Length: 327
Image 1 (cartoon, rainbow, N blue to C red):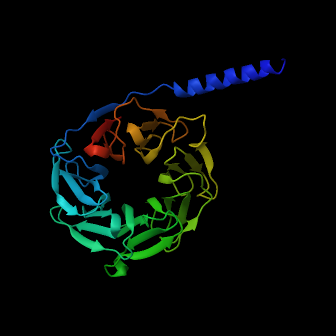
Image 2 (tube, rainbow, N blue to C red):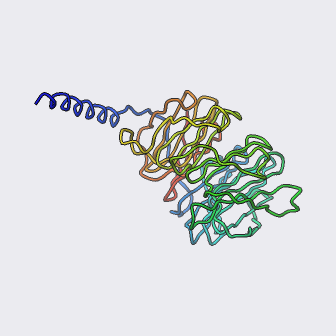
Image 3 (spheres, rainbow, N blue to C red):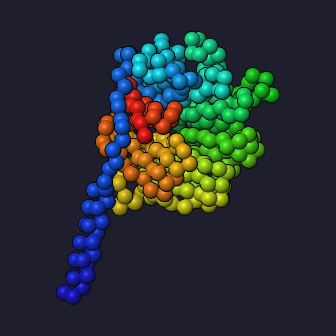
């Protein structure tokens, strides 16, 4: 009978911990819904602005309607362009001169040199699903993805001036979801169950010690200090260039809220955001040491966070939804 008392207090303590965890205070952000001048109900995957007024959204469904939606008045109204692909478009980016690149499944890369009026198609070898594309340097583009039917086969497609107009392919051992290049030499990839690092401009990639989740996005403040997030709600931090990783949040723990992360971005060295499933929006003001959940505003999955300015943070999501957040 004496053993029951400590056991009773243990369970009471456990209930209090779970209750407090489920009742964390939320923060209030200035969130507005943008009414789109389109009948699109497809999933929006990514967004980019090439000027204060001109921006583009890509999306669609996997096997149809690869859509591009544009605005020319700072996001007040949006217009649907005829489908440019029979497959979903997953990511879009722009060079400093306003040249646009968009990628999607089956290895398709689209390029526009006239502010989105017309698009040229390049079909990469292997027909891999491409999830993210970035531009860095003056004229280097890099896209990542993998074999849609295998989590153990990733790919990096790189276009450089000395490649003669062709995309160069490098394979890695995990499906790649996202990429950040810190300079022309050093970069990182968030992948299924792993984070990869390059120190030679993407010629070779080495796997780091990060593990425990399907990593969807990352942000490095410098070559040594960075964060990576996973779909199951994990947050890892490195302070030594990816040699070791510390767990900031264990997404698989029964004592944490069940959150599913899709993307992360920072507007300054200290202020950043994470988005995810069921309208999830988290904010940090101390470089990722602590995160607070924004008040509920949507049941839709938010696929991307794009910070145009601190007063114009765009959140495209499923079902043709688009939200604008202001700090």
